[in-house]
Amino acid sequence: MKDEEDNTGTPVSPDHRYLLKLAEARMPFGKYAGRRLVDLPEEYVIWFYRNGFPEGKLGELLQNVYEIKVNGLEYLFKPFKK
Image (cartoon, rainbow, N blue to C red):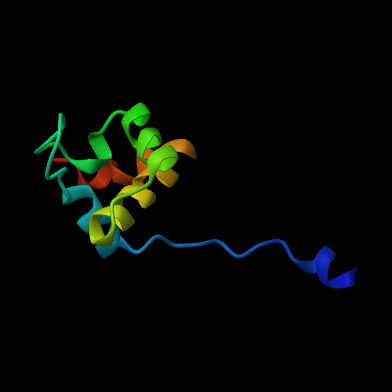
């Protein structure tokens, strides 16, 4: 119980290199081909969440975009926008 009281959480610093990679990644196919993943409509990313993300690196990137969007963390990409 004492450990729980002392646990105030550790702040997490995002990996700027990964965020840059994520900010630059583009959708390779479909209706939004060529659009940056972070700029995909939230509904589209949720569709992937419900129906399954693609395998491989694209799926990993889309999963991260999903988490960022549903948690309101889009501000993380402001420094990377040109």
